[in-house]
Image (cartoon, rainbow, N blue to C red; front, side, top):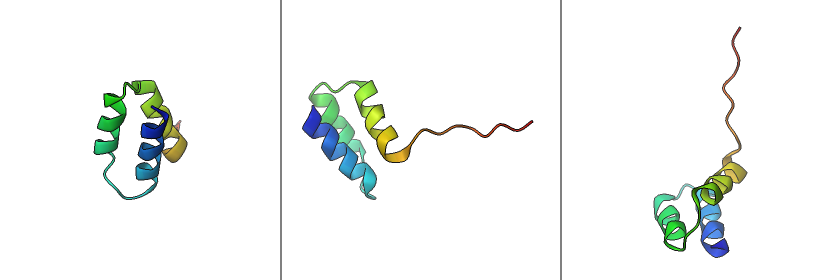
Length: 52
């Protein structure tokens, strides 16, 4: 699982399509949480700006 998530992280840092890497991670039983944590590491967490 770790290797698949590492490949996903590298793809997310480039302009490469991440879908094949997501599918590879799912095939080795990576959880949705693990996949999303990988994306959060690369892109950060979006928080909508508060407008009062």
